Amino acid sequence: MLTIYGSDLSGPCNKVRFVANDLGFNYEYRRMNLRDGEQKQEWFLKINPIGKVPAIDDNGFCLFESGAICKYMCDQKGSSLYPKDLKQRATVEQWTDFVNLHMAANMMKVVYNRVFAPLRHLPVNQESIDEGLKFLAQYFPVIEARLAKNKFIVGNALTLADMTLLAALDPVEMAQVGLEKYPKLTAWRQGLKSQTFYTQCHKEYGESLKQAAPR
Ligand SMILES: N[C@@H](CCC(=O)N[C@@H](CS)C(=O)NCC(=O)O)C(=O)O
Image 1 (cartoon, rainbow, N blue to C red):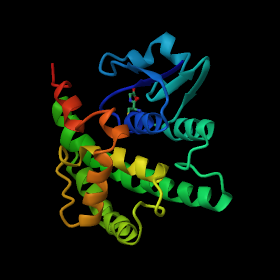
Image 2 (cartoon, rainbow, N blue to C red):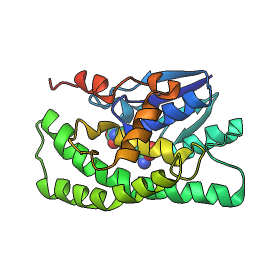
Image 3 (tube, protein in one colour):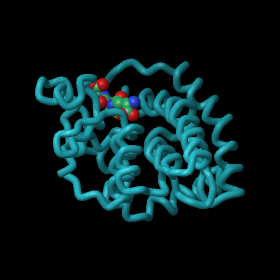
Image 4 (cartoon, rainbow, N blue to C red):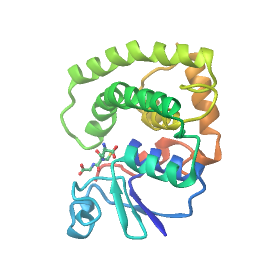
């Protein structure tokens, strides 16, 4: 049995669940209590020595880092989300890396400071928000142009690059990151959010956030 250790509010965890759902894995979802530090407990450090989610235990084979987990699951099923062809795979890697390193990282600056920090009564760094928004404003048009040409980011097939961006953008409403200027990106996102792989994870990202009220 495959177990996915995750948190509903984590983009990397949700990405792993989107992919596992899309590939039709029968898995147990083990929701970790990050606020109480369950991820740093000894039993979990045996699964992931870094003490972070997501992590998986696939019949005794443990893996962490969402990208590695997604690729492992895709290759098990021979999925076109992560194509076998060398050049197609390299192109998926390229866009996935771009999304992770440039889009998700800048999204996180805004999400952390506009959503998580206020929720936990932690200091808000306005410079970090401004920097995140500045870079996102550079990169959203790149994705918009891709989606004006193709159905998905890489081409006309859904890939890990789409799953990665979809999960990273999940908190846009909560973080007030307007996508109004990007109709193709908005339509792409709405289309993917109506898919079973997404609704099996959650209907709306905000649902989970409500459960994380300060205490
Ligand atoms: N690069 C990692 C990110 C892992 C990560 O930062 N996980 C966060 C949740 S998004 C976490 O476990 N935070 C709790 C902690 O660091 O103690 C991945 O993609 O899997």
